[in-house]
Amino acid sequence: MDVTACKKLFDLCSQSLSSTENEKFFEACQLLCSVIPTISNDVFQSLPDNILLDSLGNLLQCRLRNEQRAILIDVYACLIEQHKSVSFLCKHNKNLFILLVLLCAVEVRMMVENSQINEILEHQQHLAACYLIIEYTIASVCQSDDLTDDDVSSVLPKLIEMFHGCIFLIDQIIENVENKQIFDTVLQATVRILGIWLSQEPMALKTVVQPHLNKWMQYGLNTPTCTETFKKFLEPTLKSYEED
Image 1: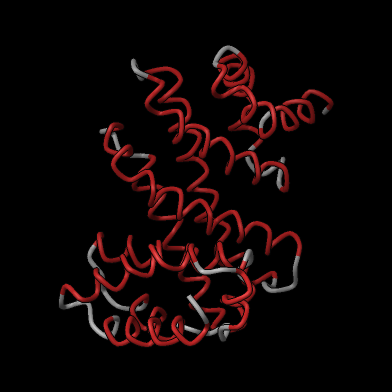
Image 2: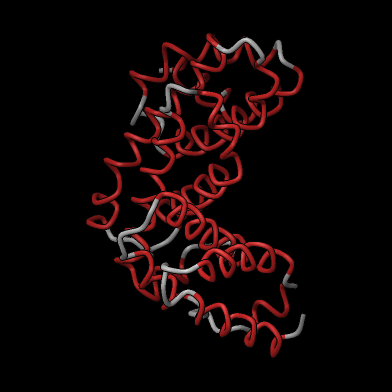
């Protein structure tokens, strides 16, 4: 797909995103989630950085049903993955970006703290989208000047609450789930995002995480499908805690 075709498609989708009151909203979001990852880097870099952002931002501020909010976040995740950054969102409208991060944190908590743990398997793709947005947000906080200290302070409490939920989910899968194998993807994704946070802020959750790490690492080392992920994202934190 060339630049002209992409612009035309995005313009059509923007029109469908003008209201959440019809099925065209879902169709447009689903189409964007399918198409955006397939756009070549050269073509994507030729598109305006703010493409779709006004339409998406207007919707983000609306009162949305759960399924509407979820697919809207998924579209944002596709854009962020193409940009490999959240800077374009901060530059376009920092307040909307902060709102997006807060909504992602809430979405994650709703999924990882659900007492009906099997339901998370139905939402793996959305969980991955939220984790991707959080991951790039962590990178922005730690490696760029996109966000001020006040900006970080506005999202940090919700992120900490979210990571408490991640810790809960990891424990639930390791300790209480019978068929652990079907949760491998969810477990590894959750360990990964928690490990990324701990690599930047190892002390923020130390008192909560430290009592679990040896048990988690033992599980990871004894589960071949999880070993690499657990060693890469948890072992450095375990070593740093032991050194302290």
